[in-house]
Image (cartoon, rainbow over all chains, first blue to last red; front, side, top):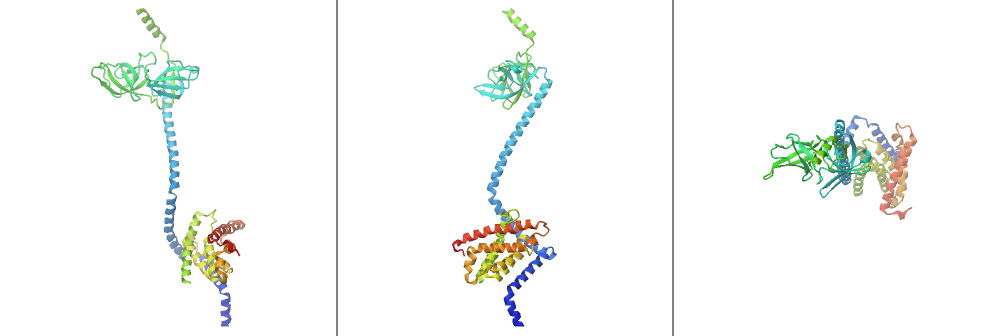
Length: 279
Length: 162
């Protein structure tokens, strides 16, 4: 009997062990929700978590280069988006102030977009997409929501060229609001303006507002030109040296209004008559 | 034998961690190559059915403990793999069986058998049994076979096809 059992076992040992191991596996599968097995699973989990952490660090080290590239691309996209937002905000501010100006202005205004800029050898022109077809004439003042831009220098059917305040040949009669002193606004240095012909006897301070004068034959009075940044009494000069920061940032302006302004005919005729009788 | 045993233990541990890596990075729609089964086939062809089953059980338990955290499943599949692959064990021609092209098709048969046996466990709660069969049984077999072929090519014994 024992021999028979021994022979049977040596013949079928593989099958018996196979059955035993399968049974053991089934038993383990059935005990997966058992509290004791959970402890064993936790130990395994803790052991591998350290290893996984190490592997993930190695993997992340190797992916740093591509990650860096991705971030650089994202950064470039964000810079572009930030620039667009900044431009949109600036344009929004300009349009809001222009809307305010349009509502308040007594003079008819023709809206126009800035389509070009020319600044070379002391020339500073701006091209607008409004021309004779829109009622624009040579000499018409051009303003933005912040203040005076310049005057129309040349005009075609659909476009006009504006001589800005920074152009070397630009001369605009202006008035210091606080001091009630008139003078001439000419281009200054480094994108600034200068106010000439203001007597030393006037008290001029930094931050004083300058607007167009009633004496001007080109532009209506009361349009803001800029603010005083410096006022100096120079030795041997009866006039003050006044530096002015323009109210309009000409480098970023994108829209403007052409004012259909003409000086009262009666005043012009009277001045012509007087000049004629003197001759 | 002791040196060989130590060698198997080392390779077994490495296989478990490589399997973990492969599960994370080479898995296609939850189907990943079963390198552990390939390891079990290899030891069964080298050392016989008993050793294959025993080794499969141990490596399977370790894999369950450290990787799947579902005790018993991989050991179940690996024991079946060791049992099936053990039938192809030839004592007189161990090297030839374990290292040449035979390894690939023996692996395919073993994988089909073991994954099919595990189908009721995988498909528990799944109504579409045929879909599970196609995806996990056939999918795993095909995917793992690719790795088996790679092992064969690495061994460089293609010309000794029997």
